[in-house]
Image (cartoon, rainbow over all chains, first blue to last red; front, side, top):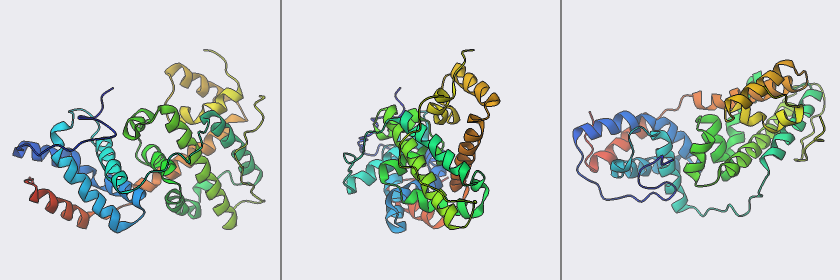
Length: 216
Length: 82
């Protein structure tokens, strides 16, 4: 599926064609309205407000210059995320080789094992507690970039696996494994936070990733 | 509808909660969760987790100053605000 005009993960900004007021109005209506989401995404990438603001400005400038490449009917927010991410990666060296190639199904099973420890610690309702909710944003910010960006796109910005796969230029299986790993890391951090806050009744043991028995 | 066991449900729970499975598979897992005392609490915990994470987006972000800067950059490029 061709989601974005003019390429995906390596979008090339072309020279600016003459734009009519109608096109500017459409840019305002479809692109600029996404500014809060792009700002949040940029901050999640840079983890620095000043750098994030610069990144947002560059993103919208590049998007405006490439607006003629944007396809009618495609998801403008996803298109902007792609531009934002590419701009960010131009200034940062990406190190994905250090990532383990996780099995998404094993990650899913590890999540089940984590839930067992949650139940044993009487923390089943921890996500209803303000103390835990408040810790989520910083827990996301602490995730390594490859996990953080997938969790942000899917869990915060409601993007589908397929769209994220296209934004990142990686297979859907990679999106799933990174997403599931990100969720498990987040849950482990939040469980620790809940325990430290005195929630629950017993000791919480962070699960190291070993799935439980596969027998049902 | 094919019957599936707990192990299969656990393996695809995230895909199910994200709505990423076929309608048939979604229904099969939904049916399993409705009657399984082991998987249902786990699914509810994960749902609560996803709801909590999604709240990050609902936190208001003050972008007025940034929006003004972006518009200024765009106007230098020829953008005409409506």
